[in-house]
Image 1 (spheres, rainbow, N blue to C red):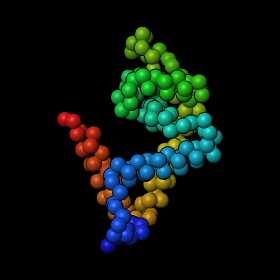
Image 2 (image 1 turned 45 degrees about the vertical axis):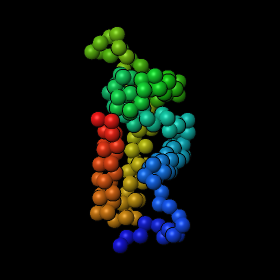
Image 3 (image 1 turned 90 degrees about the vertical axis):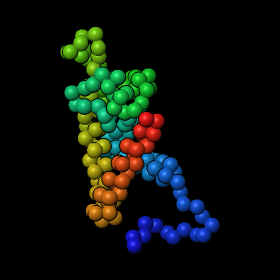
Length: 155
């Protein structure tokens, strides 16, 4: 049997899924944004990652970014405004509809996304080595399933 940490006392309660996922998310963000700061992106914050993580190199409309990120359109608009002030994105006319605007990553935005993906790949590789490739793949597949299932709870 694989041991994943200290054995629990008889009096302690097993952490619930929400606590575990929340702690994992915060710990991932802490490492990611600390390392991004060390690599030249100290002004990028976790809220910015919700847009940058889903922004294609060719750009996208704010409504698409809201859909992809699961954030409300107004929240995405505020984040895009911040990213534009920081120099990570620019707004351009959409060639398919000149009335619409595309949010397009700048060179700094592309660099941040590339570095973030590299850092996250390194984090995953570290966990894969700690657990073993097979166990890690089972964990990740199960987590993906639970995430899809939870997103569909209202349907």
